[in-house]
Length: 133
Image (tube, rainbow, N blue to C red; front, side, top):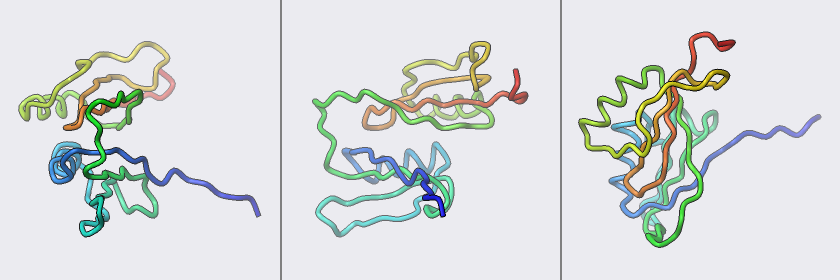
């Protein structure tokens, strides 16, 4: 039998756990799927479905070093990026790159990049209706 693998979660260090959970659940549509509040480093997991079938973000409180450089991003696919962008703008979310059209051959019809409450970059992508476009 072949070994099976699946992406389980990515960890992000956060300054304020409640603020980050609110951001990912209220503004980006994730659900809180698990949390540990009593440990020395309170942790919450947010995802777009059950953790046993969907990748999650592990948010760990009190571990964000403001001086540390972040060299990556997470990417989230959304069905209507322009509508989400309007909601995010009304909520005062910072766009590091505004909504723009994807280049020919790219997977997305539209892209935008925002910053979460701790300054982590999130790439938002609206898929093309025709995957062959």
